[in-house]
Length: 258
Image (tube, rainbow, N blue to C red; front, side, top):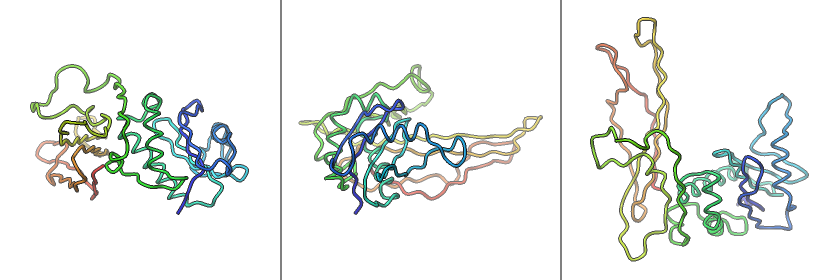
């Protein structure tokens, strides 16, 4: 099984917001500075080439992903599986987002104690243990500090939706807590549909071509770990032109409870 020697989260300026060393004798202590300097001044075969997600400097392997302008980096001297380690970084970022609500520099800084507690439970001596948000609730005890969302679409003013049972989209970004002691926890699930429409019109205003691209984000606060199945209406229509309509092509997707 792949193991890592270090994990750290860097800000866009190169500051180490989170730094965790699992085996200090394997890699030097200045790896975060080396990584950021290498990425900042990366020189590839072509000009303006982005650095690859995996590279080696002085015998140290650096593997990283970038989320919300933050660098999630793992280092090791061993010949680990790149795909496995990058997937591990993706899952770490997903768990941090679930517990912090949003994945920003501010949320990471305010919840650094919670982040270190999560790392202790998810990685043991650099070896992955559990990356399930639901299973980690049994072992994590620090309460998350919520970060206020920036004002934008959907905030302020009245809702155009007629049903009062529909929660605002910002509720999908509330932090996952370990549960309220002495009180019953609500069984809730939030679904947020993000879509982008691209429509081409002719000079007379008729639709020539149209495409839709987007994603469905789900966050579950259901007790236990139940299986979830999302059903979509096959008759979904995004627009009409006279008597003819145009629809959406949806690929088959599997959704699991967080």
